[in-house]
Length: 112
Length: 115
Image (cartoon, rainbow over all chains, first blue to last red; front, top):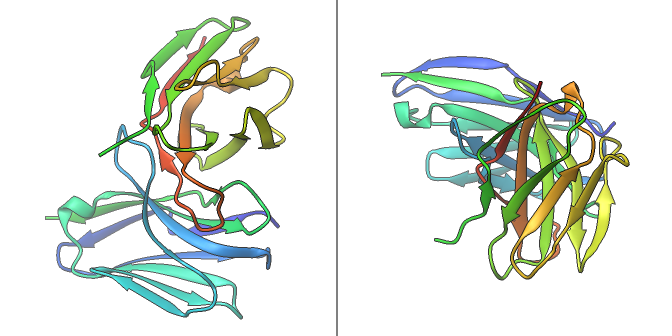
């Protein structure tokens, strides 16, 4: 129940296209859903995050869509660029807990 | 921009040996964490630390592991007797205040290889 399931494992998108990564969870105690971006040789870095009281959050080319009833959330990267090539982790945190639960990650490659 | 630093970047050790991984969190942060990432797998929480105490730990964090903040700047993870399955990337993170919703800032990681 503490898992966050992420798909796809890898994704190839043409430059300018839309990249979509999906995640699902079971634990209804989760109330904060961050996305982390990780470049090779670096630690994960917070990209964008959402709380379940809103259905969508947009920051620049990055949008999180959140479906509370389905316990699903997704990351959309509009106008994908080669510089977006990285591993993306969805994650979840519960209010009472002190840890981030990560998905398995999606390796995104944007073709130039 | 302040950042979390970790040393060494790569540590190779023999099975059964003790290793100490070092982290310097961002200076005004109060909460510290260790995570690990086995190659090709997800990032997993190990332990959180606040006010010189462990505040939460995972099942992975057994008696072979310990954490310490020996001075005002360093935060260390010790593995007392390393096993082959301890080979992973170990990330330190820190945050300025209690979450929820507060960002954790991750260091670049230490790659531990146990032979």
